Image (cartoon, rainbow, N blue to C red; front, side, top):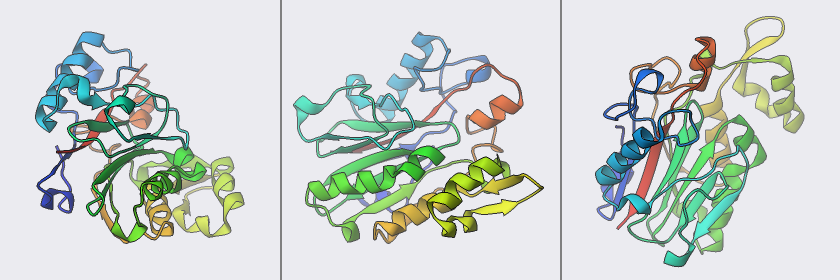
Length: 253
């Protein structure tokens, strides 16, 4: 379990970047796998989600996650009637109290947002595709539609794959360079056609581009820290058929 120092200051907030520890799943999924989309036993994942809801302080049916598709889609909960589980999107913004909103990750970054002035919370799933397609921009846009100002927002970037372990090929590099030549700073060439990519750095740039200055990073590498995190890339390297997902949750009381 990892926490933001910035968010811990607010008595009306509960949050956590959960690790893979203290759950009920077995084998490759050991142990707090919260991904219902994985091939893990459904009853184990549901027990894990119940553990998370107890820790975060909400009813199990009030722990909401998304059907994440690496898009730039954002959903907003403005009242209790809006609250539904497993809607298809990659970010959630909410003004509803006592509802935990969560993001599932296994190398991508979860980003938790808070506007203490207007009492609005948010969370985003930021892999390379979502980040490149504007998930951060669209999340902040949704906050602004609820009268937030960028300068009032706090953004916390959770654990994700470290640059040294994020090897990509030339075609991947070109996608980012074609979008903006300045993106070159997030890549380092390691061989003729291979680079390493700084996902965390790119996400931070995207947040700063939205005029958010109040940023914190939970500097943990999901790829190398086997004990604490699931990793899509590590599981592929190990030729495992599937992988678990960690959850990051924020709730307002």
